[in-house]
Length: 619
Image 1 (cartoon, helix red, strand yellow):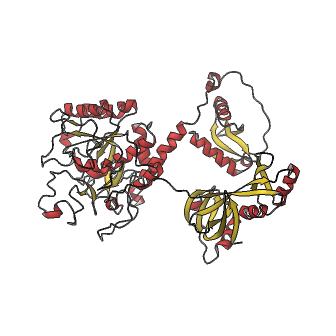
Image 2 (cartoon, rainbow, N blue to C red):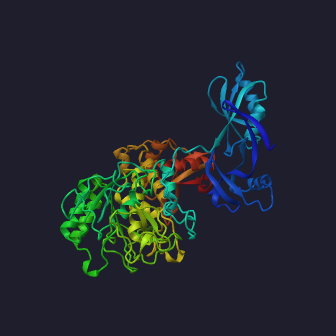
Image 3 (cartoon, rainbow, N blue to C red):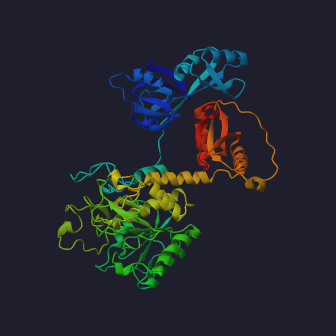
């Protein structure tokens, strides 16, 4: 039956079966299965919605074939409602309301007829039931139930794609900002880019449901800030000029205009005109006046600590060996990285430098710093970007096609060029307030903006955690042979991925909210008097293995904590490993691998790693 009509909510849906999409539940990652062509939705009604490698077969025939595979737990058809392009997946549950006066025995007869399993009684006449392997398609069951005189209403539980009420900024140059999202082309040039060679910023905004929090403060230490620029003027917070020791910033000197485009990359406002920064809601703390002097170095970082900077972006430094950092300068940076943000640490970023060297800017090499290199619009190493083992990540910048950022009103542009070529590589103007920009000077504030999005998602992250997350979620670009133990001297741990970084920040936030189970002192030491209910466990079902221990005291600690926190029995498997008695701790004795996987996900959210274990394997 490729078409059917069912009642859903207050409406009636006329459904037709998709000729391309199916829903699958598999033991491993569905997208990795060789019979899957592409994954369209990660989770819809508990299924991965995919297209199959049909190889000339119909999708119905291929789905029947795939259902027979051991690794496939469930396969389902996907439907569309008449007049809608939103895919619908039946979760397998059906909510049934019987006519008044229908007894429970009569209700049971109806369930038996369709091989349904009662999952919840919601009232005398209202139940929830789910299909079993012997049941027909849940939509067909629901349609049939609706025609039975004993049934007043039967609604299949359906999942579909909902609207996300986040609207990306409408600034007119957003389409030019390939570093935020790279479609492979630009609106006003024929220059070919590589689709996807970007920092995944729009995806991160969608995940957050916003363009970041307004209480995150990004300090940019540099020279030449245009405080009248329309993308910056309304965002300024506690500015300071180190050269004149004043809150009034020096402006108008044509030798100094670098700070304005650096700031724009990170925090240009989403105001409907021009460009948009990576974190356009963040506050902007301009600190004017770079200096190698020790006193000035201490002052600039102390100012950030004392005035509420969350992130410090620095697109400057030194690669001259005569100006390597001494211990006092290193301590000034370390102090901000550990004492800022009320002890969580300021997130500090430095550019690796543009000298095409096999070592990086000495400031960027500091162990508490996020050292940012540059990649291009084709996901290649920017040839000028310095290389070294301290590179943390890379981020999009010029190297083939430049990025766009804010321009100070006194910026003289490129020396030797005339007309629009002073500011625009192709001589095509995009407005007086903007210019083409690049170098590690651009990639660094881009990553600073990503850090602001991460702190918007999870303000409790420490500076060290921010660096760890950026590195662990970065995308590996370039040749795999260029990486050793996951690190490349060109790319660091990869090209920054704002979406994955924000997702991990959210995961850690949610895990931190999990209830903390207090463990009695006696249990935490593994010593004392304990009462155990010891029963033989049948070697059947599934659990989540959390560890193997030689010390029985650790078994007591884990058993107490896990049972209290998750309400499942702790099972101990005793064996011998390497001539010593070993204790495997498994939580739960569940009926199916899916239940074990669901428990493992709950535990992972609480910060406890484990994996589904068939108890048969421990027999």
